[in-house]
Amino acid sequence: MTYSRDFWLDRAETLSPRTGMFINGRLAHAADGDVFEDLSPVDGRVLGAVASGKSEDIDRAVKAARKAFDGGHWSRRHPRERKKVMLAWAALIEKHAEELALLETLDMGKPISDALAVDVPATVGCIRWYAEAIDKVYGEVAPTDPEKSLALILREPMGVIGVVVPWNFPMIMSAWKLGPALATGNSVVLKPAEQSPLTAIRLAELAVEAGIPEGVFNVVTGYGETAGRALGLHPDVDAIGFTGSTEVGKLFLQYSGQSNMKRVYLECGGKSPNIVLADCPDVKAAARASAGSMFFNGGEMCTAPSRLLVQKGIEDELMEEVAKVAAATRPGHPLDPSTSLGALVSPEHAERVMSYIEIGRQDGAKLIAGGKRVVPEGIGANESPCYVEPTVFAGATNSMRIAQEEIFGPVLTAIPFNDVDDAIRIANDTQYGLAGAVWTRDIDKAIRVSRAVRSGMVYVNSYDADDITVPFGGYKQSGFGRDKSLHALEKYTDLKTVWIALGS
Ligand code: NAD
View 1: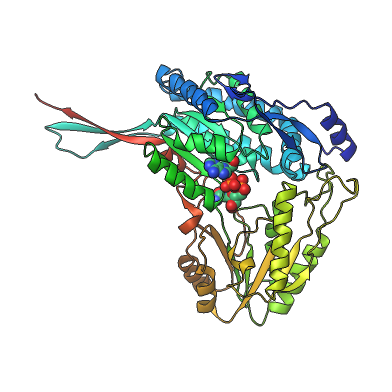
View 2: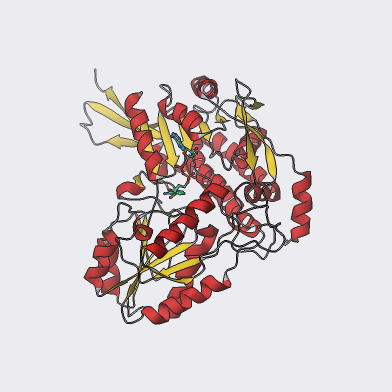
């Protein structure tokens, strides 16, 4: 059902978001009573005073998680029972889809239509998939001497998992870690981004309603430098599942070394090369798909195809079409169901994106679309500076800052190249290695480029294909460890060998 903007605005007025942390099965204040103001980038409204967790709160949450784990009500429960509870949780998330979508939109500015069509269903789908998977996963028996021993290879839950996520897909990023971590029997302490804490609290409440025992899933809201850091340094956390910037990902590696050598899995930034060869099946279609992927979620996408590598010869045709799509994609009121580009997450982030647009200009790239802030219809002139036009730079070089640094906004940088070797060289000339794409009619070239590009995911004649069944993650400084697919179960379990002596 598609509701009007007025419907959502009315509903936003009556919404009373939970603003406490969620520890040991109930809402809680920060130990020191501290709060931070959660402002909406949509129109600057105050969404609530959210508990600002510190190390004492992280410690409370980790203790609750450890107690739950040791108690065994979840960790040693029959997998089929865990599956049942997680399916009930997914059903509750689905039942509260409108509320969760509205919270997500108000908190981080994405269009309500995307929150409803993408964020909630992907979260539900992910929890369901891991619930369904967990009673079908087997251990192993090693091929040792059958006369003398039986060697069992078990996969055991690790214990307490710290989950730290960013603000661009708050629910989905959490679900990618909660699904496999909880299904395998671990306890979790989730630290959502300070810009978007509201859906995490609600997810935890619904988890308890569904039957996940108290202490198994805890949420500590707060800032990265305090709550996030305390979780990374906590001596009783067994592993961290992190999604966020490369800079902060590196801090988690340090925290691990400074504390208990906890496992750290990192999904970090990207500057993905999207290579369009002159023999691409349909230049205009490639342009439209590339621009569509670039501007989805306001460009606040780790996998955004932010470097468009275009072969000389088709540059004019491709860039003209990309600019057309950019010009047609106007930022709109996020609560308007027809809006496809909403607000960036915060005034600070919008300012950062604008500063990159200025850097691109000064470095000599050619601005062919966008470049300005706008105030969409229905938003007051001084309510929010978070709306930025889709922006396209052509004729850039790969050494420019707009080609090397992650902007994380609706800014596309196009770089011309001569031939396939040139494209591969440019594609790999980056610290990142998250995603990439190649557009060509020639299967040999497609395979050659896919193999040569050092990225965790490469698309051929498409961008952003997505399914819970396939691993998601990067090479190089885009991180390591994979979300999604059965491989994610490996991250939250440890191998144990049990030797049984025979014939003694
Ligand atoms: P961020 O790194 O600033 O923050 C991510 C999380 O880390 C937040 O919860 C934050 O509070 C916490 N944090 C910040 N500073 C910390 C510190 N000193 N110690 C401990 N925790 C700290 O990232 P962001 O701005 O929220 O999100 C954008 C980034 O996330 C981009 O770089 C983007 O590419 C990346 N991202 C990656 C993926 C992926 O799967 N590879 C997916 C989405 C986003």
